[in-house]
Amino acid sequence: DMPNLPFAVAGTGMVGYDKQQPHRRQEVVDAEMKVANYPEFKGNVASIDTRPFARGPAPASPTQQGYHWNGNVESYWLIGQSLGKAMVDLINQHEQKHPINAYSYVAYS
Image 1: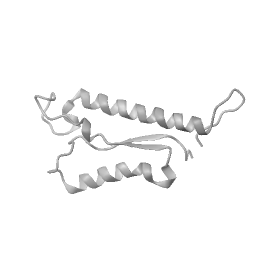
Image 2: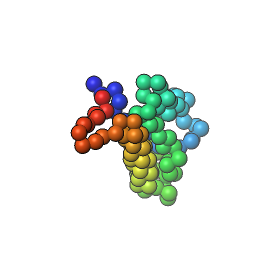
Image 3: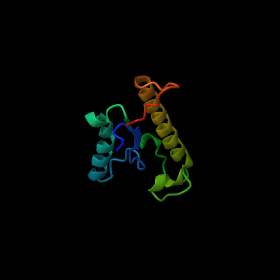
C-alpha cells in the first residue's frame, strides 16, 4: 500500500482537439485531467494534457493511421518529456515536505 506514491497520468490525446471524435473520448480525457484534483490524490498525482502534442497524418507524420500518434516521434518525445517533468516536480514537492537526511529515510507511504 503506497498512498503517497507519485504518479503522472498522460491523457489520451492522440487525436488532438478533433471535435469529430466520439463524445465518450472527451469524457475519458476530462476524467483523466480531473484525477489530480481528487482530495486523496492532491499533491502526488499530475495529469498531463497530451492533446497539444498530436501531429497530423502524413506528410506531418510517418503514417496516416489515425492512432498511435500517427507514428510521430515528436509526439512521443513531448509526452515523455512532460511526464518526466511532472514526476520530477512531484518528487521535489514531496521532498520539500519530507526532507531526507543521513539519519532517516522517509518513504512515500
